[in-house]
Image 1: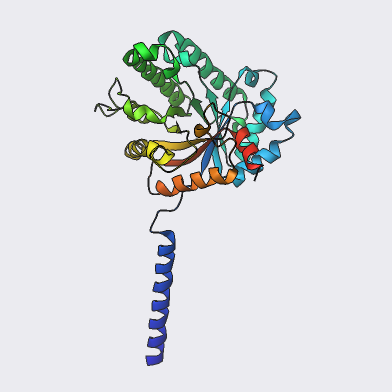
Image 2: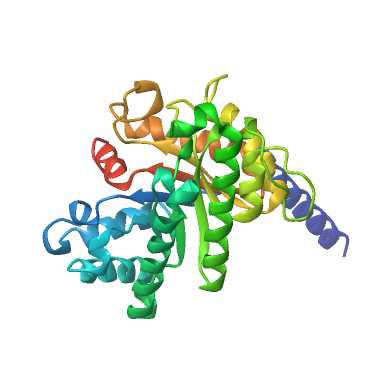
Length: 310
């Protein structure tokens, strides 16, 4: 009996030591969120003639754990190119990847541009009504960027108010059609005051908080080619991720692989290892943040070209 007790005690000590080593190896951190999202602007170019590269694209998405694709919905989605859209979305669905309809014009944030927004939303609804279930969009993703309009310089508060009203319209439409709503936002909206109240009646201090109250997900355009440092991605998005955790909104941290006028804003021309390292640092930094949805890489075609260098 005594030998059995010694053996049991030794087993417990060994087990405890193994668990301690495991915890130390994890650094006490939460499991990493390695899921990702990405943008597709030109489906024909991405897939090649007759969709010949569809299998290659799906393999890439699976290997990188991409679970959301923002697919630009041009007029071809309702015309001759509809079969290509259906085939791609069905293949993505079979691979466990959601596809959201990507669209946006700057003037949609102005009251005179809301008709364009409504036309786009109806186009998405019309496509989904005619498509088989597996080939339907799961959500709407808006890339509007009204801060590039001249109105932003001389009437920021007025433009902000109309932008908010636009988002409210899109949110109501998405909810009525059982679709998710996501938006692209710059990382600096945490410095811009909102013009309206949040959903719970309390004032939203900043525009990013207001947006997170209204939408299901946000892709932050936090485009830098360094994760660390005072001008690195982690420092730039800290406050947005705090807001995301408080709001329950899912926030993707965006990295850019496409050509850009400023080299510091993109991983284009660097190496796939550098992008992967930045993504890893960001994932570790926000591993315990419930609002962190993963990394969003802009865009899929550029990302694939960059990875082919490795």
